[in-house]
Amino acid sequence: MGDRIASHFKKGDVIEWKGWKLLRDGSVMKEIYQGVLIEIISESVGGRFVSYAKILPFQNNIVVEVNVFALRKVKNT
Image (cartoon, rainbow, N blue to C red):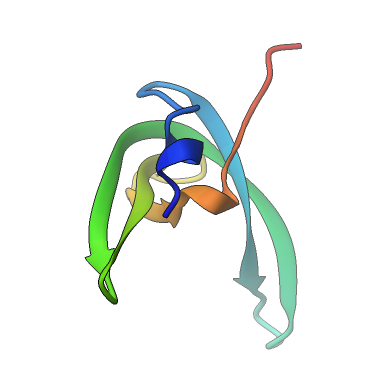
């Protein structure tokens, strides 16, 4: 799942995705993250191959894996 979507991305693309951030008071906030795509990987999950992207976020230096369905390429303005 996601091979067709993954084909629209390439290493070095600046991408963004949405996620949840837990605040100190216990509430949550939706946040938009951005980073550089490092690699597209496919894993077998439940008998199907699922595509993920390894991303280096601009906010920190911890590589994260995000499902390609959640990604959007940042356009140059």
